[in-house]
Length: 393
Image 1 (tube, helix red, strand yellow):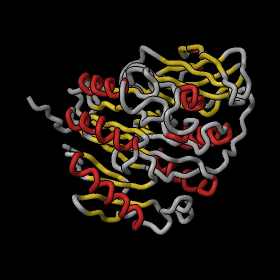
Image 2: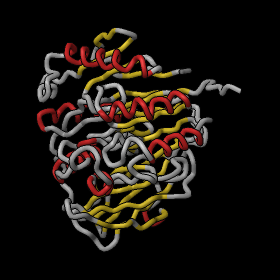
Image 3: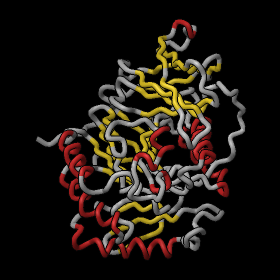
Image 4: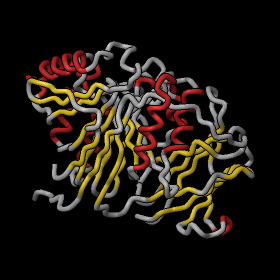
């Protein structure tokens, strides 16, 4: 029996690639004061939330205090102690914990504490059991190049103003995978701007990009130490799935950076899609997509992932990497369309902007290459058309 989406709506904002860098974070923090607060999910978003933060010292004890009642004194909040750790490539000390047995659809107020260093009070929202509206941001490829610091601040500020439920980020958070400085820039900006006027911090669902991994492709978890130490995700970690209630399944894939595109990941992808066939909306995202060239990675994505997307009715697929906004009609029948799509994308990218050549597409004034592909042709899009409301796909 066909499922009915009724009055369920999915609102998707493409904040997108070429969010190119940020200004230095000016706020001063004490060595033991929690900062760079990041929210992720390792399990069910209706009943859990994982909180990770940074301090400059190890501290003797790190705790999260939390309650649904904002007005209680902190000593009346529930509390949970965090795991504290560091790794060789960073000067930071990291603290992480997963809050569990939460109430679906509730707002929780949180204060973090490392020794006597205390964060500002903030909140997060658990997913409802049956959400009627879901709003999220999709983006990628900030890379934190200093030449565009003001742009990324503005995009992140506007993203938070949309009050999204979460941010789906498809890789390339930094330019240099082992740069403690660049990762600090990313997380400082996230801490400062990805918070609503109400004080609600916005969770992130990440996917791995080539700039997170030493050598870019063919690596391992150990080759992406910042990414895997800062983002806590469900197993098997390099790729994973989050179900935001029964309405939305978000599948994060690894386009060959720490896990091969083929083999175990394909087996896992089909099993995951089989298990989530009743989900109203299915979104898959990865850093590299299947339609940007004829190299090994996009070819494998087209041949191994795309048929599964088609078979199990994936509604939306997002990828980054090429620093352009490309919106296509549903692409099916890859055997006879692959060359045509490749040629259209390459021609469009070459002609869509004068600064497309490597190294120049970051040059001010910032203007991403925006393409809309249709059968046998392409057209340029305006920069303002980066939002899409999807209804009754």
